Length: 454
Image (cartoon, rainbow, N blue to C red; front, side, top):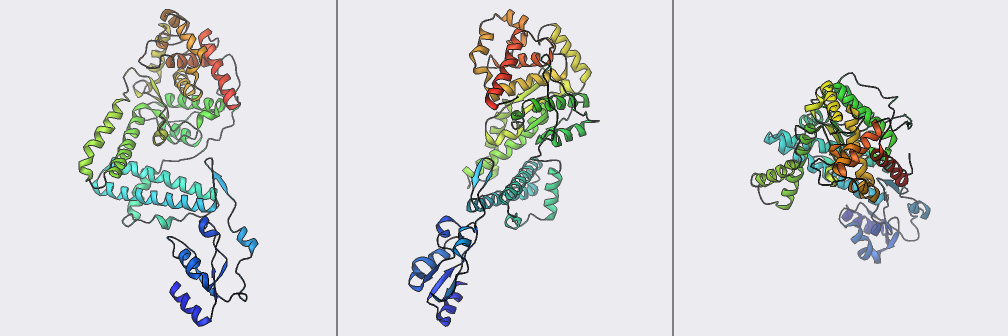
């Protein structure tokens, strides 16, 4: 301790002090580390520094002019590793350590939630907390790797989070494989508005289709629960082609699969999200008293995300950061459970002009939802030329030139469904008509303009 060092200084006859040095020192301390100071500056500089909160520096006695410094000026100047960039932000060694401490605190808090949920027998909360903890560990390890340093999981120790509970958490998150990037080699070509799909490998069953979406397509959350393997394969095939044609779109996807499965995951997540928020805002109120308000909040959100029996698929594009893991496109198992009947339904819709020409496949349903995602990414609906496609035509002309659904829908944005329908026809009709061709070519041109490709 410093008291012992002070006693040693007296016995040694020291007339000065040297401060230790380490990488990642806070800037206000870094200017003093490795330096020597006379006794007259001990109370002014040395003691306040080493007694500062969370300071890892020590001071040891020396004889001024005789004791050689432990570090040379060159060594002190290069004691920190060079700055690095992670997720678009540049970190110094000190900033990296602070970020690691923050991540470790978050993991400790999440372990506490796992303990509480397990003790209460709350499976939904335990599942949400376990998944969140796994994601935080993945981010932590990824960050440490980028920083070129070791993880310090001993700092995440929480009393009560033992091997048994860790095993239960692992069982919940075993299939969660975050941050895997797709390894794809397909080179797309343009042929009459149809995107080719050579190179795609269909899965033998739904479970393998989910693995493909995670491991090959790189989607964080996947559930094809309730749909048959043909539907799942067509969804994956479409995503495979789309991500190759529009690689910037891939980073926006956090969930693909079935609509109800996505809503179940969102509800579980929101339950945990608002539980955390309400507890933080009301730390002195028991959770039992907060629960009704939390449930009302979550139920209110879920009411805004209905899945009608008439809904074939959905595109979900939240903007709040916490909800991005669920952004993506899903298919309704009411239709996806039987791909043959699904296709027959699509054929009838095309024959009645409810959906565009050429859109008689499950792939065309996916392309419709991709159209929404591309609209959100590129702002297609804000372009005057695109709006004019809608406003310059009668409803009959829209129906005959594209589809009835382009205008007969419940979307508050009157241009949105027209854009999605136009993109679906552009991708699936070998000879896309005027409206679809204009929409498709505009999307490709805007993508190239904003991202320099394809």
